[in-house]
Image (tube, rainbow, N blue to C red; front, side, top):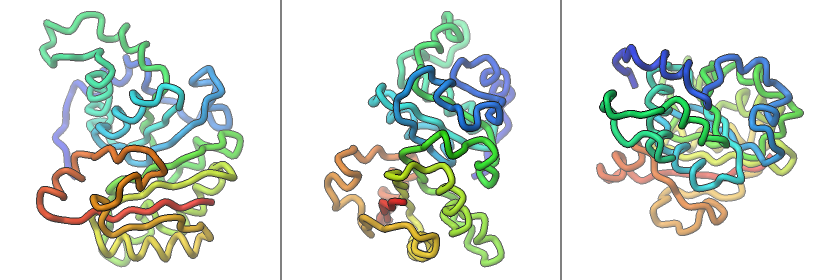
Length: 235
């Protein structure tokens, strides 16, 4: 999705207590970024951040890393996190008081700007990621671009390098072709498909007891009558 440039995004990110601009420095020591020993979950391609904002706020006992490459997306994610945590209740600049300082309240989430294709450069074996979320990633329909898919087998093999032994990947998409081919990618990368569905809305408690938090894309697709496909894969 192409987003308009927003001049406030980069300055706001640089001031934020829960944005990390030097993720290479944390490879194999992400627990030091959170200053605790809680499990770490990772979202690849967080977009506007509505999903990770709700998830992290609901689960203060879990640490979350959310990665995207676009400043505009991360800037919007930052604001959505602040709204979810009750830090930002308005976008009127004159009405926002001590917003930067209040950002310290977000203790279990880090936003990161990085190329997911090179994620092994910033997350290592010692980080032991327990769960990876991939929500409505770019399907890259043209054959020559398939290797860019976040669920492409070579990328899935990369994730294995830091996924814990009991780690899982939660994946959902609206795209039939991407889902069917991703099933093959997971098999080729030697993951075990624990669950799969071609109609997520019809499956209660599909996510191992975790609520299905709907992204903006998910709500839009469902409104158009498009069924959501989903799977859980283990290492």
